[in-house]
Image (cartoon, rainbow, N blue to C red; front, side):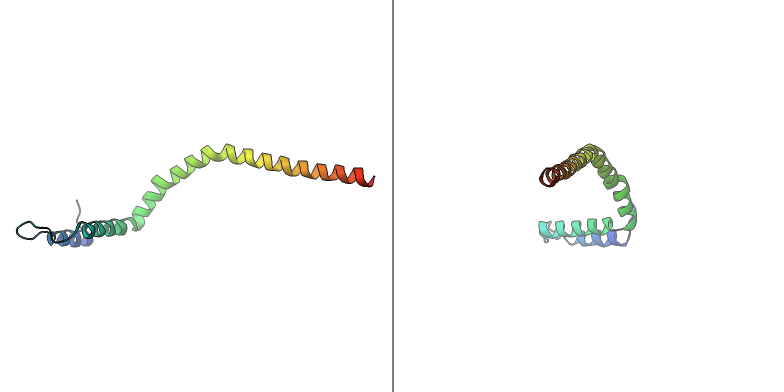
Length: 99
């Protein structure tokens, strides 16, 4: 494990959790908050963001769009059919009324 400045600070803060007689000073909420803050910092780094986007999010979105594409196509065909049908009915009604 490579230790950087943030991880060293985190481990030094963990040192202060326990007294010499092993009683807990910091609450579980504080530990959780510090851990989540550390994870949030790491996730905001550009190299991790690229990994998350390229290896996790993009494949999921591509798979979902591949699964939903037939439904988008079907709905667009139905809407097109309805619009054309309404236009034809209007034209036929105009023809009946005025001719």
